[in-house]
Length: 122
Image (cartoon, rainbow, N blue to C red; front, side):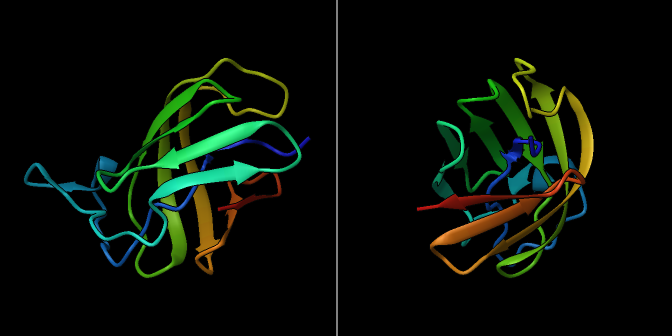
């Protein structure tokens, strides 16, 4: 089963921010504002809701995850995702740091944290 991230993490957390600092913070200011990835995403193969915020944080219902991430630029790219909590359900990544790739066209989010692409839709 593909790793759900939060990333399920998932999600779409980007939006032209380009911060390299953890949780996308620079001087305490959120760096994900206006993100094309922010909002709630649905996963079809398992009952999951992935929520990504404009403050570079997120949650996954199925995986019981809360996480933070750095913001790639534009509507996709590489991001470091730091999962703080996880229930370790099948296919869910445990707590830790992961290099993930996000891509979105606005209605579909593709998330890959090394175990294959997980697809979410709005």
